[in-house]
Each structure stands twice: as structure tokens, then as C-alpha cells.
Length: 525
Image (tube, rainbow, N blue to C red; front, side):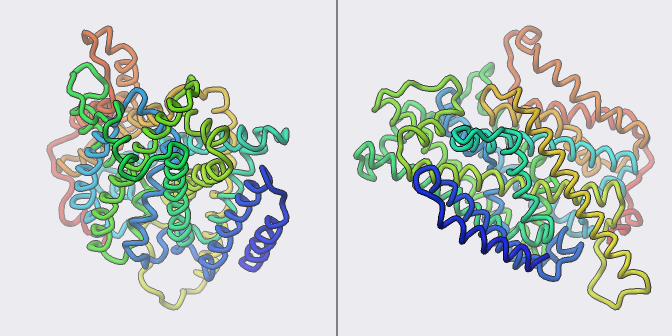
């Protein structure tokens, strides 16, 4: 299989050089891009086994993980939505990012030590040890639901842009674009898994950042600005306001800061796809070092994309370009129609890199969670290599086959959902996505908070119902808050309420007998 992937990669890289210019040049670059990804996959998939697929043998250098996590945390939606959203939100998104930093501090000092102490592969096995089987399955279910929806949504955005920018002119149907988009991710991840992803993410993160930087450079040339003038254009722009204090404003600092902290904890610390990257580090100190440096990079990268948004609006104003109805369309519109061939090409590469660096991790983590949490392949990785007992080699081969089948199944599911999303594509994507995960990640936040902050056991069979009711209540409240609460509109802080209601519900179905003692704690060691 490795030799086939390598030969195929070399073929498409060679073939891409023969494609015609103009749109053909962009296609050529795309084919070359994926050819390089397949070459990386072919190299990293050597001697692949189930452990490599899940945790890359816990041998990844921390700085590799830290840089790659930038691409994994900033999706294709972020790539186009943050620059466009400043029209209404201005730089208020930085308030969310500041909240992220608090959330990552909690992850590094509370959650990472727990995961490394218990040597978890799926982080949701902690819930079984602490609360019980039904709690464990409920947590894993909410992760699968959250990530399937968000991943398909992100891939839909990337596929739509490729469709509009390239494939519509060739009369390629959208369903085929969706199938090819997912198939390419499946192709370079199904053999090496996490061992491949940690290295392809380096490549893809670099391209995502390079695309944004080159676009800034192109706009600078079009507007005839020096570097100091470029900085002044951003800092003195009416869009550069960061802090908002009006209590009924969804951009209110406290709403966004504390909402951002909880989003970081939920979407990274309680998310298998992000934690799986961190768990590939050799030691806990390495993983913590990775988190802290990632915070620095995350702040700088978000500043880059917000500044890019300011320059996009400055360009549109300077050339009197009518703004699109959807703010998410601004960057694609200018890149494809006004900024020239270089900008359009790097935009396509940037949106692909931003999307696929997220989706490959998500697809791998969906496979990991389902195989471990629902198929019980194994929950704790085998300790260092030893002679395999009789029959174990066959069982290991069976496990690998199961992993590949599950990986393919989730790929097909993503294609189906992408096509369904074609019918609901209005609005500010980043805001809609963050609101959606505020409902689905709330139960996870409540489950882990209850497990870590109390020692009380729960009536385990009631936990699925307890976790289902808060998202429903929060959704209804979110839709009617302005009417019911004197004009108050919920922002990202709805996640905090969701998690709090889950916590209180678990408290109601708990008893006073301590459950998390030293004996239970030692089960995962």
C-alpha cells in the first residue's frame, strides 16, 4: 500500500506540471499540494500499527505539535469568516481569544496531568472510571455529534469555495466536489493515522499562514502602502475596536472572555481530536510546553487574520467595490475577482490548508473515539514492545482492519452531511459554528466539571437524560432571551449556562458516598 501511495503521489505531481495555465495553473497547484501530502503519508505510514494510528507512539516533539495545532484549531471557516466578520464584530473576536488563553491554562494545569497520569488513548474513558459506563458513553456520544457536525460544516465551506471558484466553470456537480474533497483526506490519513497527521499539519499550517501573508502583501502593493502605512491603516481603522462593555451587546467583554475560556476547554481540553495531538508528546512537561507556546502563536495568528480583514475592507473602499451580502464572501470575492492570479491561487491553497489540517485530525479522532469508546478495541495502549502472545498477531490485524472500515464509514458520513449543508448556507459561519458547539459541548463541560470538582457518584443510568435536557433548554432560551430577559441576548456564554445546568443536573442525581478514591484512580494506570 505504501508503494502504491508513493507511486500515485509522484504521478500526480508529475502530471500537474502538464496542466495548462490560468485556471489550470490553480488545478495544477492543488494536485501538487495533495501529491506532497500523499508523499508525507507514504513516508510516515511505514510499519504502521494501531498505536501509530491513535497516538503516534507518543514520540512527537512538542514544537511540532504546537505549530501543527494552529492549523487544526483554525478551520477553513476561520480563514474566511474572521476577516469578513470585522464589519460588524470589529476586533471583538480578540476578547474571545483572550478567553482562550485562560482556558488553555486550565487545560495545561488540570486536564493534561489527568490524561497523562491515566495514560488515556480516548480521553472519555476517564468518565467511565469516575462516573460509570452510561456517563462515559454519553460523553463520547456528544463528542461524536459535535465533531461530525462541525467537520462536515467546515468541509462544506471549503468545497463550496472550490466549487464556485473553479469547478462551476467546468460544470462539475457539487456532490462530486464533496466526494473528492473527503476522499483526498481519507487517502492520506487512513494508513498512518495520527503518525501522519502530526507531520502533514506542519505543512498545511505553513501554507495557511503563507496564504494570509501573501494576500496582505498583494493588498499592500495595490494600495501603494509602505509597511508603516500598512500598520497605521490597521491600527487607526474604525474596525480596530477590541473591547465592548454594553451588557446587552453580544460582543460584551465578559460574555466573550468567559465564553472563550469555556470554548477552549470544551473544544480543546475535552475534544478528542485536539487532545489526541497533545497526547502524542513524549512527556507531560512537553505537552504543557506545547500548550503554552501554542497560546502565543494563536494570539499572533488571530491578529494576522483580523488585520487581513481590515485591509480587505480598506481595499474594497479604495476601489469602490460593492460589499457582498454575506461578510464571509468578502475574502473569496476579492481574491477571485480583483486581487489577481497570485492572490486567487494562494487563497485556494489557504482555504484547503486551513480546512484539511482540521478535518484530518477530526476524521482520525472520530475513528479513534468510535473504535475505543463504542467498539472497545482497547482503552489503554499496550506497554512497550514485547513478544506477542499466541493469537495476538491475528487480533492486532483484525483491529487494524476494523479501524480502516470505521475510518471509511466516517468519510462517507461526512460526504452525506456536506451535501445536506448545501441547503443551509446563510450567515456568518464562524459565529454560527461557535453557537452550535455551545449547545453540543455543554454536556461535556458539565460532565468533566462534576467529575473533577466533586467526589460524588451519580445514578449512572440517568446521566444521558440529564445531559440531553440542558442543550434543549439553552436553545429555547437563546432563541427567546431578548423577549424574556428585557433585551438581553446570549453570546458564547450560553456554553457556560449549558455546562452549569448539566453540572446541577448531575448533582441532583448524585449521592453522598465518595466514588473517586485511590483504588478507582489506579484503574487507568
